Amino acid sequence: MRISFSPQRRDDALTLARSGDTLVVNGDAVDLSVVPDGATLPADAIDSDWIVGKVERIGGVLHLTLILPHGPNPSQAVAFPEPISVTNNGPVAVPYNTEERDDQ
Image (cartoon, rainbow, N blue to C red; front, top):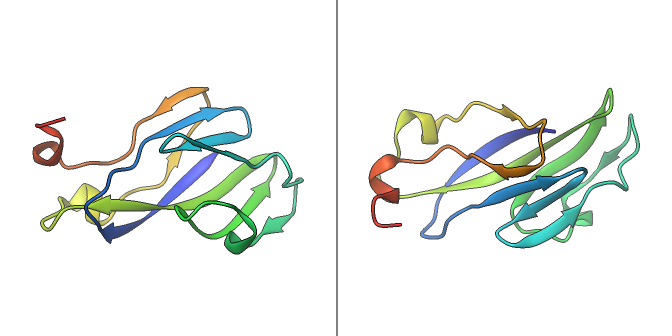
């Protein structure tokens, strides 16, 4: 799974986990197994406000973009995040500002 991020000023947080073709976004499971290789699914066909843009499966790999919430002064890593490749099941680390997570 290749996840890109679209940074957005918001006061909420993003937590992710992967289980096969299912992405758990803030506790809500999004089953992406319905996307066959070479196909594209528009974001509005997916029941998640966190997915923006299309979801594609290219060479067996799901490609999608998620909103990345951040505070008023994001670091460069959060304001301009690099896409991540997720190959294992379990929690997925997302870019964050260290100072925003100190109280969590």
